[in-house]
Image 1 (tube, one colour):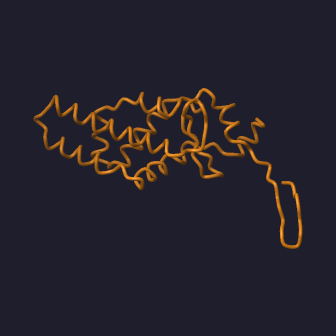
Image 2 (cartoon, rainbow, N blue to C red):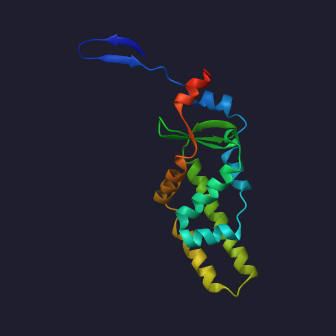
Amino acid sequence: ITRLKSTPHTQIIQYNNININVFLDKHYRSAMNLTDFVNKIKLSIEDLIYTRKNGYINGVSKILMTNLDKLDKKKRPIQYIETDSVFYVKEENKWAEDQGDIDKGINSINKKQIQKVQSIMHNNIKHTDLYVEMVKEVTNGNSQMDNEKIKKKFRKKYIVNKIIMLDINCL
C-alpha cells in the first residue's frame, strides 16, 4: 500500500492492484469459451429425472458442476474471484468480468432440457404424466433470481483467490 496524498480531510491510498484479466490470460489461457462449453453439454435422461425430483435450481446446478468438474481447473470457462465477489468468464478467447454470459449459459441449458424432454416424449408417448411433470419443472425456473441461486451454488467451488495470484507472483 502506498500513501499518495494526505491532508487533514483527504487521504488517497493506492493499493497494489492485481490485473485479474492478465492473471487469467496467463495461467488459464487454455480455458474453453463459455459458449463452446455449454454447446458441448449433452444431457441424459438422468439429468432430467434429477431436475424433476430435486427442482430446477438443483438440476441445472448439477448439470453445470458435473460438466465443469470434467474439465481441468485451468480449462474451465468460469472462474470466481472471491475477494472481489466477481465471476470472470472466458468468451471470444478473452477473460472478462461476467456481463450476463453465465445467465445466457444457464438459459441455454434450460433450452436443452426442454428439447431433451420433447425428444424423449416424442419417442415414447405412453408416459404423458412423466412428460408433464418434467416440462413443468424445467419450465418452472429460469428467472434471474433462479440464475443467481444457481451461481451461488457453484461460486464456492470454482474460486480463484487473489492471495493465490500473489503467491504465483505472475505480475
